[in-house]
Image (cartoon, rainbow, N blue to C red; front, side):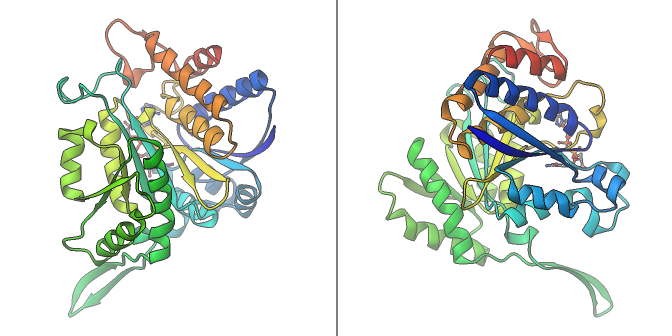
Length: 354
Ligand code: NAD
C-alpha cells in the first residue's frame, strides 16, 4: 500500500521525537512492503521564524490533501510575545478545525513495569483508560471577549455545543466502548451547565442503539478524583473539549510520564491527525533525551485508524512493549536496574523489534 503523510516536526523536542517515528514507519514499510511518502511542512514557532505565520497556507493545503498528518509539538517561550492569533499553539487549533477532526482519542495505559505515583493496591488491576475528547467546539472555540462594564474589567468565554457536534463524537465513543469492555462514562457538569444537560440527553437517546454498551454519568469534579482513587474501574470516557484536555493530562501522570501517551484526532473520513499529547518541552530540547514513545504510539494509531493496517500497528505496539520489558528507559521513566538510553537509541531499539 502507498500513503502520503504530511509531517510537521514543529518546535523544541518535536523534531527529535518525530525522527524516531519516521524510523519506525520506514521499518514498517520495509517489513510489510508498503511505501510511505513524507511531505515535510512547517507549523508553530519555526513557521513564524521562517514565514511570519504560525500556520502557512502550504502547510494547511498539505494537511488537507495527504492521507494523514503527524505532528511533533509546537510552542516555546521564544514566541510568547506573538499576538494571540499568531501564537504557535494557534496552528494546532487551525489544523484541527480545518480537518474537522472532532474526536480526539487519548489512550492512557500503564505498563506494569513502569512506576506510577499511585499505591500498588490502587493499580493492582492496571490502568487502561480511553478518553474520547470532543476537539473542535466548546469553550476553546467559542467567543472570547474582554470589556469594561460599570468601570470594571470583565471577560467572557462562551461554551456552545450543538446536538450534531455531540452526536458525531458520541458515536465514536459508543463504538469504541462496544469493542472494549462495553462501559461508557459520560463526564460532564450537568448539575450546573446547560451544555452538559444537552450532552446527557443526546447520549441517553443514542444509547438505545447500543444495547451492548452500559452508559453511565459522572460529574467532572468527581471524575478527577476517581481517576486517582479507582483508575482500574474506568474504561472509556466521553467528554467535552476542556474537560477532556484536563482529565487526559491528569491521567497521563499516572502512567509514568507524559512522554508515553499518543493520540489520534479523527473526523468523518479516514484522514486523521496524530500527535503525542506532550508539548515541545523546551527544558529538554536539543539534548536527545526526550521520550519518543508517545509519538511512536501515535504512529501505531495512524496505521490502525487511518490506514487499516491492524497487524502493522500491533507490531509497533509490541515493539514498544518489548523495549520496556527488556529494561530500556529514557530519562523521564528511568528506574533502578534499568538501562538509560537516548531518544535516538530508543528509536533504533524499538525498530530492531519490528
Ligand atoms: P510540555 O508537555 O512541553 O512539558 C511538560 C514537562 O514534561 C516538561 O518538564 C517536559 O520536559 C516534560 N516532557 C514533555 N514531553 C516529554 C517527553 N516526550 N519526554 C520526556 N519529558 C517530556 O508542557 P509545557 O512545558 O507546559 O509546554 C511547553 C510548550 O509546549 C508551550 O509552549 C506549550 O504551549 C506547548 N504545548 C504544545 C502542545 C502541542 O504541540 N500539542 C501541547 C502542550 C503544550
